Length: 276
Length: 304
Image (tube, rainbow over all chains, first blue to last red; front, side, top):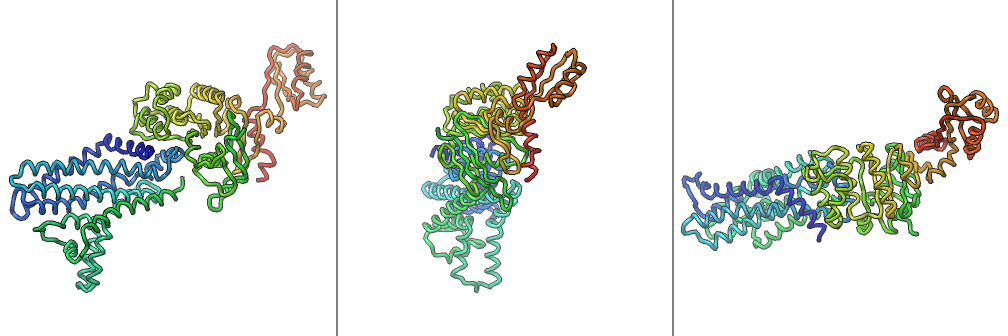
C-alpha cells in the first residue's frame, strides 16, 4: 500500500503545484453556478428553474468537460515519464508496474474527485442558500449523485488515458490519441447511433439499439443523472432511446464502475508489455 | 562467499540482433568492476539485465542469489542511469525526498546525501535550473539512497569537472571500504585505474578481457616504458641496449626511452643507474587506455 500512496502523493502535489486542482474546481464552480441561473435563458426565463433541469444541463456540460480534463491530466502519465527518462529510474525501485500505475491513478483520481466536489459542491451550496423554497433532500440527492457519477466518469477516462499512454512511443502521439478518444466518445458515438436510427428508419433491432448506449461511459453517465426525477426534462437526442432501455439504475452504476476498472486493467496489461 | 552478481552464459537478443554473446561475469562483495567498451558494446544491456529491466534470452542472472526483479534485491541496489534526468518542476530536495520514500530510505539520509554531493546550497532550487554536473550529482545522491549493497553507475563522470570527478572517485573508494560492490560502466577514462579492482572489456556483445589490471597487463604483454633524461652518454647506452635486443628511442635532447617487457623493468633500471647519472627517471606502466586499445586491436577483436 505504501508505495502506491507514495506515488499518488507526488501526482497529487504536482496537481496542487501546477494549479490544476484550483483551475478545475474554479471552472466547475463558475460553470455550475452560471448554468443554474442562466440555463433557462433559452426558454425565456431567468433565474433558477428546477433541480432536474439544472442537473440535466450540468450533466450535458460535464459529459464534454470531464473526459477532456481527465485525458489532459493523465495522457502523459507513462509515456511522459518514459520520454523524460524517469520511468527507467522508477522501474529500478522496489515497486511494481501495477503499483506505479495505481499510484498515479490514486493521485490523479483524487485531484478529479476533489475538484468535482469542491466546484459543484459550491454550486450546490449557492443554490441551497440563495434559492427560496428549494427541496433540500432532492437537491442533496441529485447533486450528490451528479458529483459521484462525474467523478466516476472522470476516473474512467483516466484509465483510457493510461491505455493511450502505455501504447504510445511519444507524448505527441498520446496527445493526439487522447483527442481522438474524446472526440469518439463525446461526439462520434452518439452521432453514429442516431445515424443508425435514422438510416434504418427505426427498423434496426429496436431492442438492441438502446443497449449500445452502455458501450459509451458518457452515455451511461447521462442516463444515470437523467433518471429518477418525477418530472423529468424532455430527453433529446440519443437519450430518447433510454426510454426503451429497461435496466435498473443499479446496472447503470455497475456499468460505469466497469468503465473505470476495465480500462485500468487494460492499461496495466499494456504497461506490463512495454519495454523498459 | 556468495557473489553479489552472477551472470552465467547470458545471451541477449533484440529481434534478430544479438547484443550479448554468452556472457559470464561475477562480482564479489566489496569489489569494484569497471565495464568498458564502445557505444553499443553491450554495457547498458548488461546493466539492464542486472537491474531486472530485461529478461535474458538465455542464461541466468542472479543478484544476491535471487532473481534481479525481486523487490528485496531492488531495495539493496542503487542505479545511476546514463544522462540521468529528473522531474524539472521539483527541487533537488523534493526529488530526493520522493525517491527516498519510494525506496523506503530514512528521510534523515536526504540532507546528508545532498551535503555529500555538494548540493546543499542548491537543494531548494528547481532541478530545471541545474547544470548537467549538478543533475549528475543529484543522480548519484539518488543512487546512494538506502545505503545500497550494490551500486550500478552508468557513465558517472559525464558532465563532472575534474574536481567533482576526483570527489566521486574518493566516494567510491569509501563505499568500497564499507563493503559496497560497484559496477562502473564507462568509456575508458584516465584516472579510473586506481579505483577499480577488475576491468572487463566488452566489444560487440562479447567479453574480450576480464581481470585485474596487473593480470591484464601481463596477459597483454605490453611494455613498461622507462624514460630517463639528463644523460651524459645517451647514445652509448642506447647502442648497448639495442644490441641486447631492447627497443629504445631517444627521448628529448639528452634522454632515452626503453621498453621493458615481462619483468625486465628492474634489471634495466639497475643498469641505467649503474652506468649513468640521469637527472630524472619516469616509469610509464601501460594505462587502461593502452590495454583497451591493445585488446581492441587484438586478433580476437579483428576476428569478430
